[in-house]
Length: 357
Image 1 (cartoon, rainbow, N blue to C red):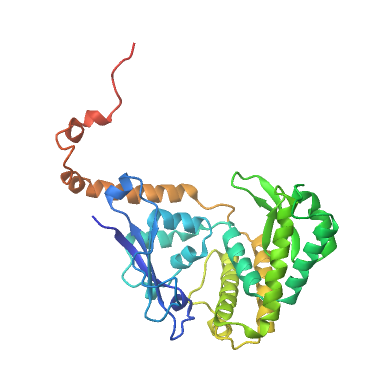
Image 2: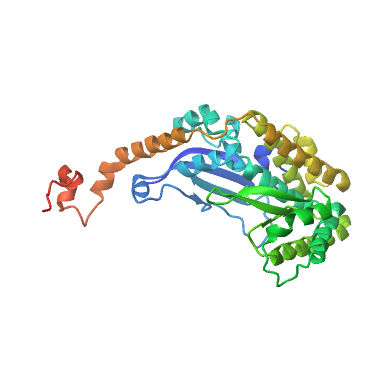
């Protein structure tokens, strides 16, 4: 028994309308696993078995990235605000490599039930791309100021005092939007203050020495990027265009709960990707787009949470039907338990009537 393909969709630059002659092919399939895999607890997975690209070299137009995502995983990713999966859910039919399964079409018709104000992943990824590839002098100066403030407060590599005790004074000394305190929930939902130093987070609960390490690392990194600003590589331009695309997609999503594909501003984004726009202009636009995304996210009127009951029941129904439909064929293939009572006695699956005195 094999996976049932519910949808196979063109993804990446071809879906966004940003492909060039050098762009590789990206495909993602959403699949329904076989009964045996579901029964053995393997209903959640992502694989790259069809990919021909190699991490040791650059992708070329002849490479194919072919990913498979199980239905349960796909729903989980959409509900958690993972942009890649949200893009697939909003892909026009002409970007489907084959006719989508009725089950996937039913999911698309109910995509509004997966929408929520869970924007952390979108904002986090966009911000990370921006601060990593945006060589602005202001970030270098902010990271330097954070490091100098910590040193002035007596922090060194051996300081074991909690970092949170220094946050307020560091932020006050730096006086910049690039060094601020953010409240981020941990895995248990407890809200923890973090010092955001140019996009790198320092929890209040760690030693202050770690904040110093992060500030020093950021100042070193941005120092190099400021000096290399005239030598931006293809990778830099591509990453800056990614950051812009994600920000603009994110802004549309937090406003409407949907994404337009191919992206509406693809002409401009392609110019950025190919290095046709002055770097200073691009870096300013990236900063403004990230700020706009964060502001729109705060003002969003989308539902607080997705419809978790719908997700749960959709998976139960889809996986349950697959098991029921395949079970007779699956049981015929069994060998070592064929003669056991379990195979033919339904009572074996019911509650025990044995009374223990």
